[in-house]
Length: 437
Image 1 (cartoon, helix red, strand yellow):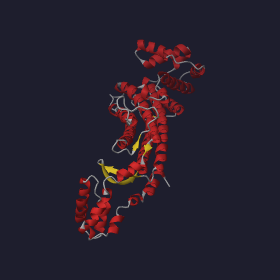
Image 2 (image 1 turned 90 degrees about the vertical axis):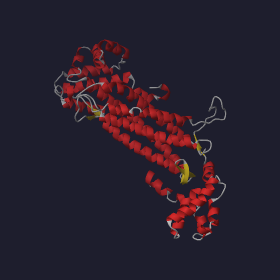
Image 3 (image 1 turned 30 degrees about the horizontal axis):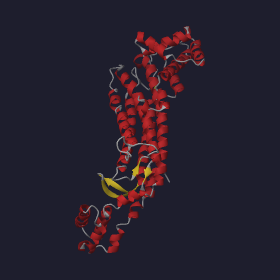
């Protein structure tokens, strides 16, 4: 975790003290249920919660010191708690194995991280919706292969991003449900030394679902899907960031990141206004996606248990969620303050002498009885003259003076093909699909 790209609420989930607090809750809830079942004295759970009610500070350094000797983190924690609680603590962890604690804790952390990410997505969706409606009818050029294609609106571009992030949100809801599972099934997952009722009780207390069947660990296909979902969200962030970066290029300059008073763009060139935030988002997206392959490789563990996944998850759990949280918040800020230049969009639309209307002329010729092949030839030969003139010539003028074209389409019919508003007649219908009526 790099503090530069971290926010406090998400970071707090992954702090050692937060992890140990979840460990305690798992152990104490399990001890409560074991007491109810008569496996341990009911006083054992009470002793744990009575100590917890005093609001103890988790001494991370002391636990680390014990682990330095035991070489086992869960045993170190249990030893430290026993030192605080006293004799009743010996009933903790009855019939449980370390994975019961570690995997269930990770489930809690990832579920809590998901809740923050869902809030982040809600904020981003709100910003995209507001700006999409603001520019619903702002004409701009659509590009394919980076080349002028046909007119669209800037609001539609933002509506596309909204729909994409709405899908991302739905995927994350599903991934959260899949990852939020509790396993308290003991060694090799057979419940030989612990009643399944304990797992059900702990799961209910922590807002999780019992894992239907575990080995000695929660199956890692769940985690693979979770991190893959984060990777897809990161890619959607990058897609919008790259769009903004392209639009901010000097020769395009249809939109740009907000440039605050006193901000500097370059140490050498005082005129520079660089798309630094969206470039940063591209880099952050790469880091989130870097967690996906290790998560997929974690699925194949040896038999009922090995710990090859453990070190991986100590990295990717915090790093991927913290980085994605920061990236979503940054992208929301970019969208919220994005500077949009409709006049420049119109200028770029007009840049190539009306070439963006070529398809309408093609279709009009076919409807007038000209074969598609001949229609394409007639429009293209005039369009290429405009292209080679770098927009100095007018496609409409060339078509009017083309005898073969004029034989099928009148000047008024040709002019009708160059109506910009024609392209936006169904924008309302698209918005209704995306945002509802």
